[in-house]
Image (cartoon, rainbow, N blue to C red; front, side, top):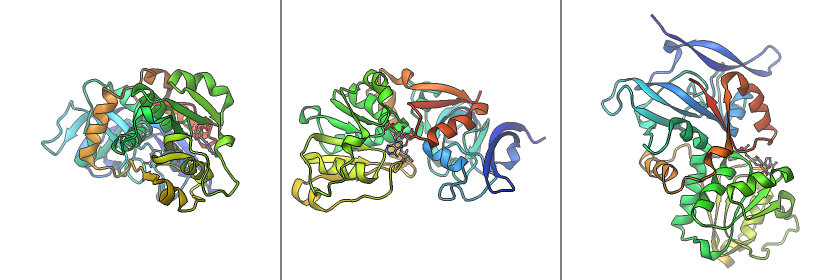
Amino acid sequence: MDKTFNGLVVSANDSGAYTATLSTKTISELPAGDVLIRVHYSSLNYKDALSASGNKGVTRHYPHTPGIDAAGVVEWSSTDRWKPGDEVIVTGFDLGMNTSGGFADYIRVPASWIVRKPDQLSLRESMIYGTAGFTAGISVAALLKNGVTPDQGPIVVTGATGGVGSVAIGILHRLGYSVTAVSGKPEAHDFLTSLGATDIIPRSELDDTSGKALLKPRFAGAIDTVGGSILATLIKSTNYGGTVTCCGMVNSGDLPLTVFPFILRGIQLVGIDSVEYPIDHRTAIWQHLADDWKPDSLASLTHDISLAELPDAIQTILKGQMQGRAVVRIV
Ligand code: NDP
């Protein structure tokens, strides 16, 4: 008999508004895939909120179960690579976009999307990271690859209280960097200090609208999560030869800039994509996240929510009011 389970289902009502409700689903409704995973934890990312509010750039067809992250235990597998009982992590690819996602008791996915959970990390910890933390990890890896070292000066992190930003601060602090946090939340000063930020500056101070091609250099590198004029300001304010990573666009998808930071200061702008990030390299990032990059603050930058609490949390993240990470407890 077909097994039933719980999941959050987003659908459009008669007036075209999208609502998320806790519903009963069946295993046979899940897309075809090599591996059936019993989800223990998921996490809430900005992209989930877009999917849950009818953003067709993320999810084309509804009704739909969002959740771009899942950590759980293999229950059934058609490949030798995975066997029942394996503890695994799935982030990105098409999960939660047009493939039924982690905001449910079960997912069924291709074997090639799955990463083995490192021993040093619990399933819950892997979802404190989730896509946001994994993206922070890829961003830090880009700075390291480009030779940005702690003695060169501070690293600036934007969207500092958000998922990517807060984990990035924790990792950089663990690696001995001095971190400047850029935040629109004055009340989050203590939170950011507890993650390891040594300097905190308001968002408005790093949003240059003077039209100047270059600004006084002040950072050895940058991890940007917001885009737009703030990203442009970072690129214009980075020291000679520095690296700026770019992963998000909560501020804007535009980049109002000239070529001068690149041709006069040799700045490198590195695009970060966690969705199609090659599976072979994923394992290495997760291993670092489990071990030598793991922030002391990891436990304190999250709060747990249930599937039933997700609709409220989705509104919070859409308003840019989320602080740290929200782990979704499924089991
Ligand atoms: P969150 O919502 O958790 O954090 C975003 C933070 O940005 C907010 O907490 C806030 O921090 C700041 N912010 C909000 N609104 C604005 C605004 N209008 N202008 C400037 N800053 C703002 O999101 P995530 O950290 O999960 O994701 C951040 C971005 O990265 C998103 O655009 C997301 O889609 C993208 N992303 C991309 C990935 C990729 O693979 N390329 C993977 C993961 C995320 P504060 O108040 O402290 O300033």
